[in-house]
Image (cartoon, rainbow, N blue to C red; front, side, top):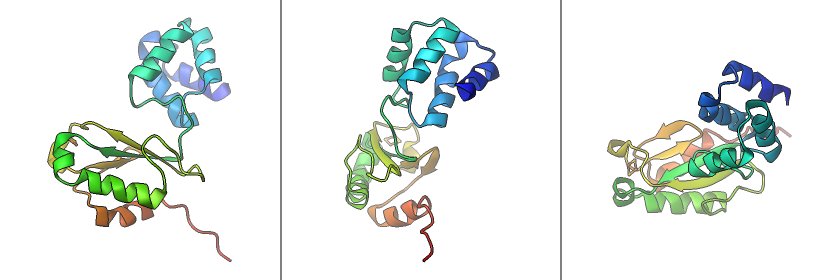
Length: 154
Ligand code: FES
């Protein structure tokens, strides 16, 4: 729990910074593990139930293991009418998973959201924290190629 203690120190053990604290922990572990939440609960004297309600309220948080890369497809109205369903379908085919699932190699988790607040760029796919605007199904392969781990040389 040393790394989590360092995160708590970074925010001065302030309960008012709990969202940033949880965000940093999730970046560290890819999701919010129970043991981490229990540790934060003890250190900051925040009831565990409160941490779980924050973790479930904010869609950015996950209580389930996630892949190394989080692929988020906006399915809000602007993105939907400009082709998001075709983009999502291509991602599902390519990754062989549905929204909410993680690839068997733990590389990608696919997720949908309703409006990322950047409708002018519709349709949008966000990989990790990188926005890809005006995405089309045909651009999916190139988009994912930027995140593929290098293949081992023979
Ligand atoms: S509908 Fe996709 S960003 Fe608003």
